[in-house]
Amino acid sequence: MSAVLAVSERVRAGDISATEVARHTLAALAAEPFNAVTRLLEDRALDEAAMVDQIVAADGDPGPLAGVPYGVKDLFDVAGLPTTAGSALYAGAAGAENDAEAVRRLRAAGAVLVATLNMDEFAYGFATINATHGTTRNPHDPTRLAGGSSGGSAAIVAAGLLPFSLGSDTNGSIRVPANLTGIFGLKPTHGDLPMGGTFPFAESFDDIGPFTADIADMRVLWEVLAGRSLAEVRGEPRVARLSGWFRENADPDVLAAIDAIAPGAPLVELPEVARARSAAFLMTAWEGGALHREALAREPMAFDPQVRDRLLAGALLPDEIGVEAQAFRAAYKAQVLDLIAGYDVLLAPAAPCVAPPIADPHIEIDGAPAPARAQLGIHTQPISFIGLPALAVPLYRLGRLPLGLQLIGRPHGEAALFAFAARLEEQGIVGSWEPGGAYRGAAA
Image 1 (tube, one colour):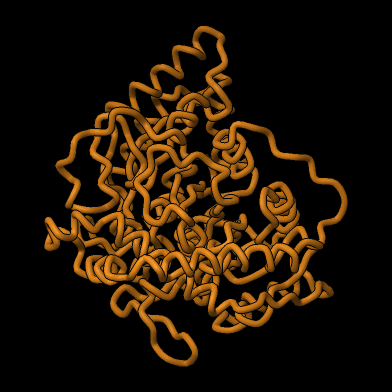
Image 2 (cartoon, rainbow, N blue to C red):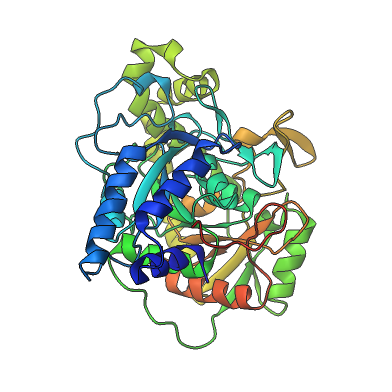
């Protein structure tokens, strides 16, 4: 049984209390060796768990996530705490007045918030190399990166220390770390899951989404966060393989897996992908630079130096460039949607390689070394650019470093992605596992 549903079922049945689950989880997180946690929320977690236990004791319904512990990337508002977005700049800011809307919905469903989780400062990177909190390590090999910018959220689930977590994805910041740590991660259709109370990066692309160890948990979390049930999927999905850009700079094992999953599926080449990615880079820099312009002028030395330099470059971009990129995006999206209208699932790599070493955080792009912090999203960024939903799924690679792919859908097509992923999971093609090979079970 899935980790989320296993915990919830046991709590609802009275086999274990939510308070016991919370205490067990907090103790494990206090000793986690991956530098994934930035703050343990012990008092809040025990209060929320006690409320779940009271409802159970009164024969009430605490919700589908009863007593399930989770963490959030350090850019979600948590009432009473400063929302830092991984930066020392806001460590002393006033506490948030309310929880982020996603946190509110999870609490209403019975989930218990236990921690905030590490990230690249202001979500600007694919590595979770953080100047304040340090680098998050990959549970499958602690000498390697967990990916980013939601690296703490991915690593803590991959390690089996939490059943699920929340991250954010602007250019690939959920899909990249999900693939490098061997778990499931969702970037939803742009705007479909609640963004209220999250620290923005580039609002044209920002989305939130869950990390889970299996697809059943992903489905229930999507329904809780979206506030509605998934559509029923009938018939065989129409599958295509993305070609061109998406078969370049890709691990041969991932390409072989894609071809084996859908051997007769057509190859579809999206037009002008390099231009789309360049436009996405420009819009991200332009929007991020504008957001932080005043703080950059006021306290430039409080920023992570690598993030500061990229934000400064963005702040110097003329508005005309950003407006031109926005116009291109609108035309490009219409062109791509017309091209993929006949398909339910598009198969593509989510990361170009396995997790790079922390000591040398570079990857090979077009035959030359490139910084992982900027280039790990080479296959995810063009998809975010036009707001399509994409589900990162891990290939079952027991004993090897994780790799996976992204299942991409048409807008609001998550149900088809989940159904296809469930089929691959049943066939043993995709699935996550504990570092060291143990079966992944409930946190309790």
